[in-house]
Length: 225
Length: 222
Image 1 (cartoon, each protein chain N blue to C red):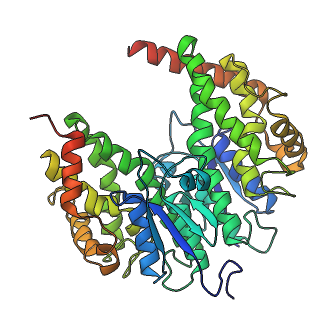
Image 2 (image 1 turned 90 degrees about the vertical axis):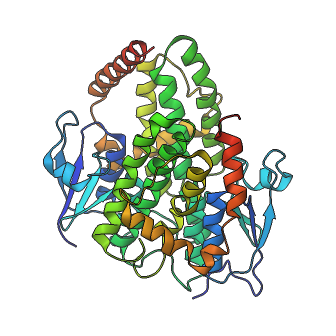
Image 3 (image 1 turned 180 degrees about the vertical axis):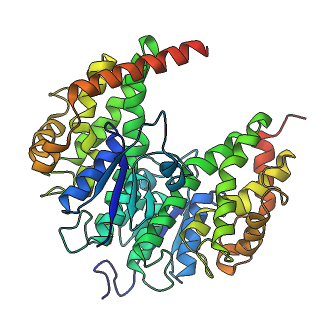
């Protein structure tokens, strides 16, 4: 099916979605690790608009934006189990929730992680409200995608590891077991999937990185006020 | 094979607001495919129980309700329409071309529109507003066709209706220049071609109302 390369960083949760997708489909690919402080000329050529990872290169043609890449992979390697449902309404519903995760859930949790004091206290409310909505989505289901895991699990998958890291480094507690029993149950099942289990970046490295990132954001914010 | 969601008589309702570019996108898609629908105008300061029921997460328009099933988010709605009604396709067939269309639609929503909107009533932000537009200009240059979708309008053209119509109205209302012919010759030409399409004309709000709205919302007090 052609030559496949993935431009990624070791830590990006968005790139990790693509790693999962490629492995789940059994696609042979080459990984190119980027240092975002020193972007390669190839990355700038393949993603001139955003200059970000992930970028999938399929037969020398680049595809950017993780959700776009996931759908591309699903449509192109379509003889194996599909990530997205066949039914148009179910597909639309999945796309709606993917957008909700990327636009709302991620941004609200990130804000809570990257702030401190009163600002952080203020940010926790919306983050929890968005997680309440996510929790509701899992009622009566094994996975976000239903009986078996699929597209939406790849989209929400970052929660299974990165949320804990943001909590620890941000000094916040979001995933309370009384309030979010379904998310916690899903997290265990998701992490049991072999491809998922073997693909997480090193936890200690992630803690260090997200600690530094938070310090950087806080000092930048302080400097500009 | 017809979708299981189609019935002998489909019931299609669109909850929207006439000045909304996002609702306009969906209307254009429906009209392009000749789909009969009922437009239900929402008062955004007094949202209907139906809207809150059909879009409890965002409580926003547009919402499409097809045979009782609600779909929200304009691009998600358009992809749904394209999946169900196969005539006059809006997205390309080819997986790569489809990925490109989705990429540009997301770019318009994530980068172009927020940057432009930010510049209303904030003159310093106008330069920033034009940066993302340069990428759209290049895309038209590289493609060398009448529309982003090629010879016919597609997803990206429909999403870019904001640039085709709303920006011009804001420029007139506020006496600002964002999309000049000098900087964006291809984009300006595309705007003319796009708003001259009949289905687009039929989906646009009256220009004077839009200009009046922008004057009221962002204009300096006189």
